[in-house]
Image 1 (cartoon, helix red, strand yellow):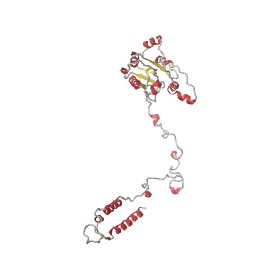
Image 2 (cartoon, helix red, strand yellow):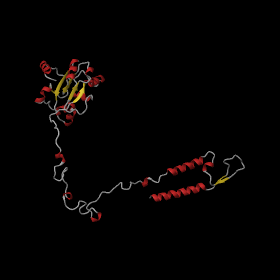
Image 3 (cartoon, one colour):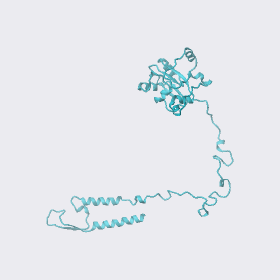
Image 4 (cartoon, helix red, strand yellow):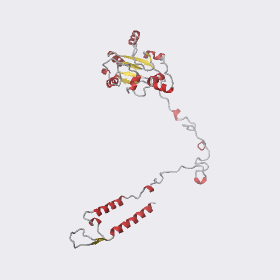
Amino acid sequence: MLRRRITLILSSSLQNVQIYNKPIKISQPIFTSSPKIQSLEFSQHPISSIAPNGSLGRQFQHYQGMRKAYSLLSLNDLQDNKGARKQKTRKGRGIGSGKGKTAGRGHKGQKARGTHKFGFEGGQTPLRRRLPKRGFKNPFSLEFQPVGLGKIAKLINAGKIDSSELITMKTLKDSAAIGKQIGDGVRLMGRGAEHIQWPIHLEVSRVTVRAKAAVEAAGGSVRRVHYNKLGLRALLKPEWFEKKGRLLPRPARPPPKLKEKVDSIGRLPAPTKPIPFAAEETEAMSAAPA
């Protein structure tokens, strides 16, 4: 294909050279204004010297530039490099292929037969059993997503949170104060506590001492509520239960070990009004460690 292309280019270039080297007869004067010169015959002069404006010369130079920029490769000649595409080895197709009969596995032995379990090392103790164990994973650990008071105050000033209503974890999620990976709940932090200048009421899973003191100093309240995994989903995504045609689950009671860390059971669906603390609860909260 490449050889045929080269010969075609050489033949076309020779024809063009013969055309441009052919004598040209011009019946009218070109360079001189003298009426005596009526004809001019030349053969080995550049085309740019024919016309004073150089139009034919520019065309010839453009043609030469096209010839220089012309590539030997065209669309119908596109192909991969040699060795870029390698055919799959067909095993067990006769001794002439070199991969017939035993198909490159040799005679007998464990490697000539079926596969073995991943990590098998021939019977010796595998690596996963030779290495010692380190640490453990606590199945009772809880992960809470933190949110600062400064961020809540910023969203209230932006009009995304209504401070006159109860601020729940669903309110924080809908206003993008927390992300989607909530885990087991939300922990209220004291970052930006100086921006809280008005009373707000919140219901979160956990709260720090500094955040609780800042909210109560402004005339608000913070209640620690308990939700299990299913209850937290019902709080954040009640439309999921409607889509499945299910009823909202009943709020779960906290386990005995968590009773001292929460104030009440979470309410479903998401509440809009806070529950005032009783006098006994207030005394117990002040006496209990935070």
